[in-house]
Length: 244
View 1: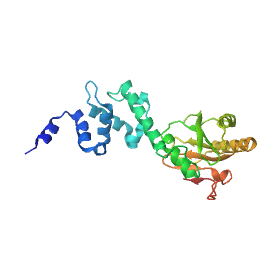
View 2: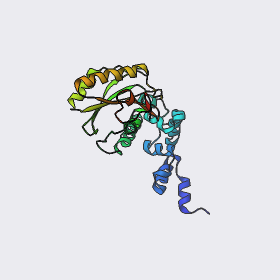
View 3: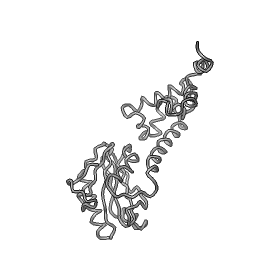
């Protein structure tokens, strides 16, 4: 015979069950659909919040929940029941997740290896659908002084010149810099344009006195360091570029 609590749970509307489950078992017990249901709170006319969350997860396909990190508001609003407010909630959650992933590594991180740079920027950049080039500015100990997006390109290219890079670096009083950019294809193998950008920035940095330490290319869960094409600053001699 069912106890009173079991009977009450069975009588709950479907859209209320994730709240009850979260209160009883904690958020770790919820599925991704249920977590989304708690965040979205309510459904819309003709669609429950549970169904809305299922439609949302289905829209991500093989990417799963990580698809939320690259979804735009316009794309989210095409999903049944999701309007402007709910779409904005979701993109803000995605942005928070990226910032949390970075903040747990601590303030003013020290970038002493290519791996440390790639790990710090992986979640921020691997979901981007356009190439984005960042200049990362460092102090004498290799600690992060600041970063700035200096170019947003198409899926295939990102146009950027040394002038913009070093104006930013001089303004932040950087001692050295690292370039970081993503390949939306997911393959971090450097293109001819990537190598040419590295060469131009390296030469300009040597003239100005702010050396380029590395150029990290972010793919999907993998990255490449062009440090060996520069001057082997990390003491790693494993080839023209190093997969991280």
